[in-house]
Figure 1 (cartoon, rainbow, N blue to C red):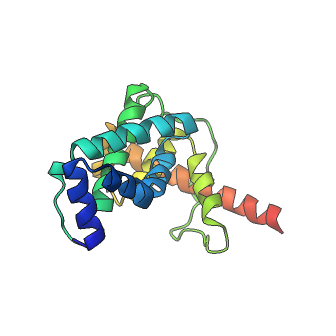
Figure 2: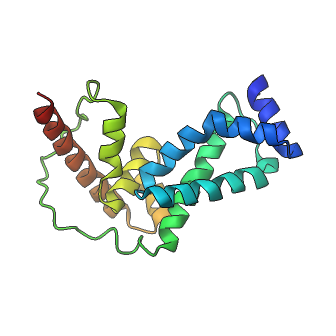
Length: 186
C-alpha cells in the first residue's frame, strides 16, 4: 500500500479523525462525481455520499489492499452500490427501464464512440447526468464500471437484451447531445 493509502486506511481503522478528513479530502470529490453519474438530484447525491462515507468508515476492516489505487476502487464500489441501492429504494428501477418514447433509429450510433476530446469533462459529465435514469444507470455500469450486460442484468434485475437496448439508446442520445453542443459552440 502506498504510504498515503496505508496510513489513511490504518488511521480510519483506529478511528483517527485526521485520517478520515484526509480520506475525504483525497477522495470526496471523486466519490461525489461517481455518485452524480447515477443520482441526478444534488440533495440526493449528498445523502448517498453521506451514507457511503459512513459505510466506508464502518467497513474499513473489510478493506484488503490489492495494489495501488485499491482503496479508491474499493470506496468507489461502495458509492456505486449505495447509489444503486438508493435508486432501488425510490422504487424507480422497475419503471425506469421502459421505453420513453424517444425515437432513436438503429443506425443513430456507430461502432465507434464520438470524439469528445474537445469537450470539457464537466460538460460530458453533465450530459451523462441528464440521460434518462435507466439509460444513465446502464451507461455508467457498462462504459465507466466495465460491467458486462450479463452482470448489469443481475445487478439491476433486467434482461440482458434490455441492458443492451438501454446502452444503445444512451449512446445515441449522447451522440446527439455532443453534436448539438458542437453546433452551439461554433
